[in-house]
Amino acid sequence: MVQIAPSLLAADFSKLGTEVKKLTRAGADALHLDIMDGHFVPNLTFGPDVVRAVRSHSDIPFDVHLMVAYPDQFVEAFCQAGADWITFHVEADTNIAETISLIRKQRRRVGLSLRPGTNVSRLIPFLPMIDLVLVMSVEPGFGGQTFQKQALEKIAALKELIGKKSVRISVDGGINNVTAPACRLAGADILVAGTAILKQKNYAQAIERLRYD
Ligand code: DX5
Ligand code: ZN
Image 1 (cartoon, helix red, strand yellow):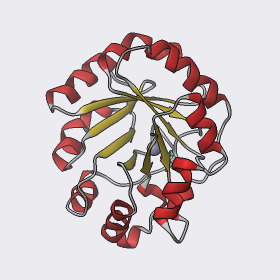
Image 2 (cartoon, rainbow, N blue to C red):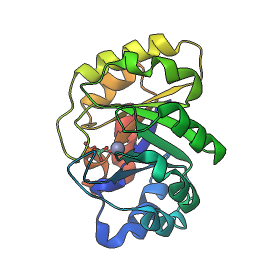
Image 3 (cartoon, helix red, strand yellow):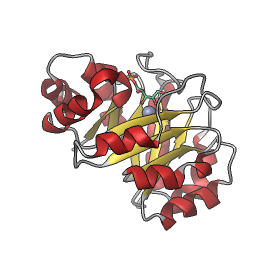
Image 4 (tube, protein in one colour):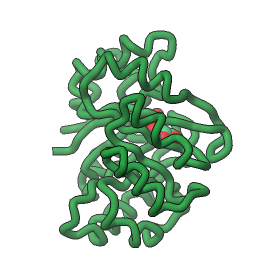
C-alpha cells in the first residue's frame, strides 16, 4: 500500500505542534519537512530548531527534504533535531557519495531527490547507496504548484533501474486526487502532499483519499 507523507509547508505556521499532532492522528505514515536556504531555491523555510520543536509532538518518521546548496553542512544538525530520513538533491553543490556517508554515519536513512529537469540517469551510480528517491513533480521552492506529468515517466524508469534493490520511490509536488492514482499506478511507494491535505478540513479523509481513491 502506498504511504502518505504530508508536507508541513502547507501547515498553519502559527500552530505547528498542533498541526503535527493532527496529522499523526489522521494516519500520516511520515512527516515531510521542507528545508529551503534561499540559494538552491528562491525561498526560505525553517531550520533544525523548528524540527526539534515539533519532534516531541509525533512519533512517526520525519523525512527532512533539504533544498539547500550545501547539504553536508546541515546533516548533523537535522539528525540531532530528530530527522529519520535525510533527503538531499543530486544537483546540490556537494560530493554526493561523501554526503551519503555522512548521513549513514548518523545512522539515518538516505534519500536523493531530483528536479523536474534532471535526468534519472544522474542517480544510477548512487542507487546502491540510498534508501529513497524523491522525484520532484514541481520545481522545488513553493507549495501549491501544478503537477508536471513527466514525473510519471521518471517513476516508471526508476522502477526499472531499481529492480530488486530496496530503494523506495517518493513523489513530491502537486499531488491531489487526480495525480495520486496516476503516481500509484506508475509505481510510487510514497506520496508527499501539502495543499491536498493541509488545506482541507478533514486531514484523515484527505489522506485516505490520496491512498485509495
Ligand atoms: C516543494 C516542496 C513540496 C511541497 C509540496 O518545494 O518540496 O514538499 O510542500 O506542496 P504541494 O503538495 O502543495 O504541491
Ligand atoms: Zn518536499
